[in-house]
Amino acid sequence: MKAIVTLALLLATVPVWGVMYKWVDADGKVHYSDQAPPEGAKQQETVKVKVPPPAPAAPQPDGKGATPKAKTTADQDMDFRKRRLAAAEADAKRQQDADAAADKAKKCEQAKSRATALQYNGRITKYGPNGEQIYLNDDEIAKEIVDARKAADSWCK
Image 1: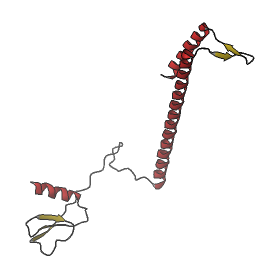
Image 2: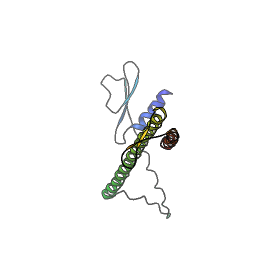
Image 3: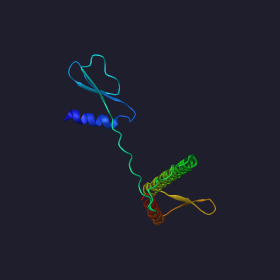
Image 4: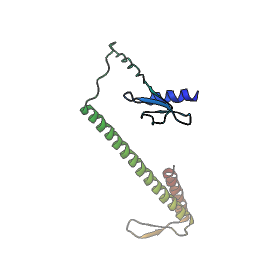
């Protein structure tokens, strides 16, 4: 059974223009090869390879059995350029998405840091309209903490 399966597989993979040889060596093993058997082979046989008939052409939508024309070099070049352009656009989109994700992560971290700093630092200042430092009271600090947490939540989704 194994010999039949092996023979079938070998015959299926043999090139159409090749010749197949079968021989039995001195130990009694059967060999198949595309090269002539050695001089000491007990039995020698040339196996003929049957070429399967070509498959019939698939019918066209118009009902004719003609096969589609092979693509010209210009058509192949155009297809190649389209694939290359599509790949470049996909790469640009991936890079843009990666940059946007990195920017969002950076802003999330900044917003978290601001909320933490407002919550744990004692005296908080901000700059007034004339550039002078103004100290925030407890109510203003609480409002700033709420705003900072909202900003952090919006960036860290």
